[in-house]
Length: 240
Image (cartoon, rainbow, N blue to C red; front, side, top):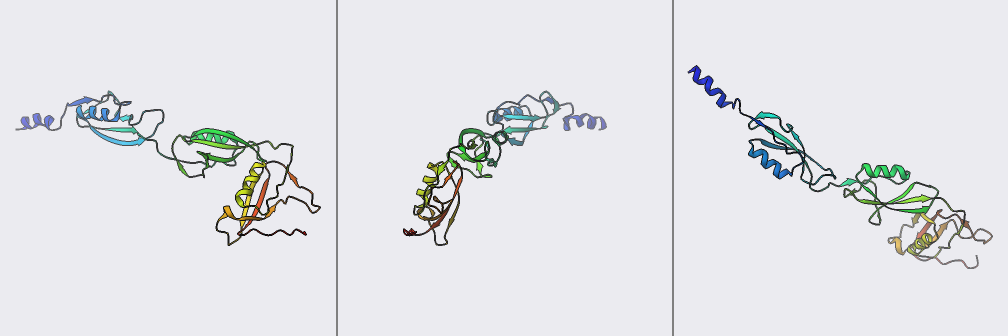
């Protein structure tokens, strides 16, 4: 009985039944899993990550490695490349230098799109970050590999621009006038009863278009203008 028991022990424990792990790294996941199961291995998907240089649904890593000798029914752990890229968080680029912003884009798996130069005191710094023509806030989820357009501060020209007279204009018209003059809209302060900013009217601006001697005021391109808005159009004092 002892001889029979010892002889059958190896049959019960699969003693001596060893298999060589095939190479599945780099294969399509479905093909690799099928091959492992046909060879008598149990397959466990350990993790899934995304590598943009590899096709989706590709086996990136296997454990045990290829050609390792293991027992039948041994588990093989696989790491799979995701079929679709995951979203990434938009980094904050505004205020950073162009070179530093470019490095940050690459680290976050994003691509530099168009660059637009705009006169500003922050020469060489990022003034705005845009996606598909629209400003995108830091922290917003965006697709992996998105093209990000940057507005970069350019050197301030020596020329000066006349401060436009915006009093009585709608906010939309005033904003367009400011941009066309090469200036920057800064603070917008609306009265409490203003519900639609676009249709509100400008009743105060800073800087004003004329000084106390009624002479035209000039500022450098890129400088800012603040606006105060009211619900109705204010009448101007022609005597003043």
